[in-house]
Image (tube, rainbow, N blue to C red):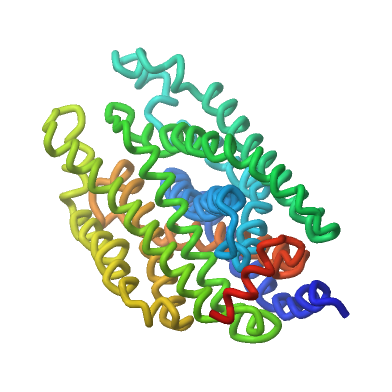
Length: 395
């Protein structure tokens, strides 16, 4: 049996995890259905928050996958299949976006004609912020994301079969423009889906901040999965401390990138002190939300930053995995902090549907992710950089 076949066959143990994820997803969505009958407004609010978190993992994975193909090197070989599996869930996420479309009037002020008619600023923005154009843009976003992911996954499978080094150039020709398109579409989608919850407020750095958060969440998720896979064969034979060290440095870099953009937005708005900009932070610095913001500073910046400075920690799979899980949880808190204050007055507005929606969407997403992960060998042995990774393991 070839190495590739061995790497594929032993993923059958994931079947139990698939069933557990599917069960949790169905239970969560059934709870959401009950919540919808009780309080439709709360259902759509909670659903949007959960959706933004899980879709961010898939979209961030697409960005890192393109970055790896552009830069080359051995660092991305271990997480390649994880990233690819995440991107192949995008069609599922497109379907899961439908409830957001159905709840536009309940979520967004600009989707309510009576509100728009009485608001001069919303009237000015109406040619862009309207339900029909919003839906068209969302369809276009998903179309581009899915198309890019399709070619990356198709060529990767071809590379496994043929070992054709010429495919590297094809990856680069797609991923160069693809990264630019990803940032552009990520900016527009974050404005559409999140920033427009507060249509009187704007920030020119908001889209980049949102994209950086997606990438941070995706690399943390990929590291956590690699750590889990490396605890047993066949991955245990391929992963070394040097690989964890590389991934830990990458995680540290993205922690700093997210922190830079987050602080830059705060500093610019604080220095400008303009009445049309500061309400966003004033709302998040009161009603209990200030403690969530402080937790983010600690959990998504200070603590990971200090811990990841340690070389020994980055080479320890168990410790690195715990840091990655910490950042994933912090990402969920971050999405909640950026979104929920636009919909609720205080932290006391936390609702059980927030947990049900995140769990339901997450269970369905993880089920499809695990299923996609089982479809191919866990490592792209046809990639020329796979040999470099093997040598790197001895260093």
